[in-house]
Image 1: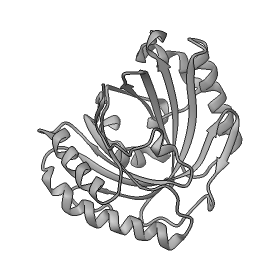
Image 2: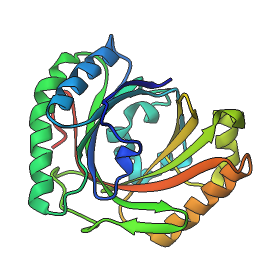
Image 3: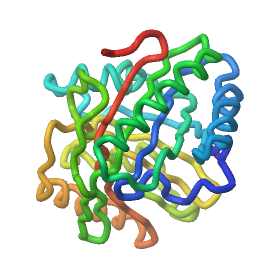
Image 4: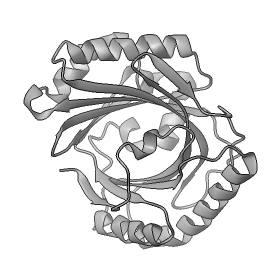
Length: 259
C-alpha cells in the first residue's frame, strides 16, 4: 500500500478533475519525511484543502528524459529521475480547487499556497524537495478529449520553461500479474515519455508516466493514448487508461525559489 495518508474527503481521481488545481511536494529520501508530510497534510485539511501522502514503489527513466530541449525541465521537476534513482521516496498532493476559470482567481490561489508552504516546509531539512502547482488543462479518456476553459492561464512563475506536463494513467487489477519492467518493455520506443512510476495499491498496480511539452498536439496525444491502451490490453482487457495534461503554474525548490 503506497498511500501513507489520505483525507476523508479526498476524492478518487482528485488530480484528474478538469480545470482543477493541485500542488505536489516531491521529496527524496530524508529522515522521517512521510510523517512530516503527513503533518503538513493535516494542516492543509484544516484549511479546506484535501490532501494525500503517497510513496512511489519504483521509477524508471524514459527516452524523452535525454531530449536536449527538455534536459533542464527534467532536472528542475524530477531531479531524482534525472539522476537515475529508483524512487522519490514520498510526495504530498494537495487539492487547491475543483475549478477556477479566472486568471486572478488562479494566481491568487497560487500565491496563497506558496506563502503557506514556504513556512510549512521548514520542517523538512534534508533531501531534495520540489514544489509544483498545476492546473488540469485537458483529459483524454475513451477517445474523448475534454479541454478546460480557458485551456491556458498565465503562470505565476516567471521562468517556467515547458508549460505542460503530460501523464498517462494505467491501472491493472491484482490478478493481471504484470511487472513494472515488463510493462516498460512492452511500451518500447513507440511511446515517448520521460519516465514511468509504479504505485502499489490494495486494488491493484498502477503505472504513471511523465513528459514535458512546450505546446500541445492533440492528434499526437490521442495517438499515443491509443498506443498505451493497446499495450495495456495486450496483457488483459481489465485495465483502465486515461491521459491528463497539466499546465504548470508555479515551481520552486525548498531552499530558494527558482525565480
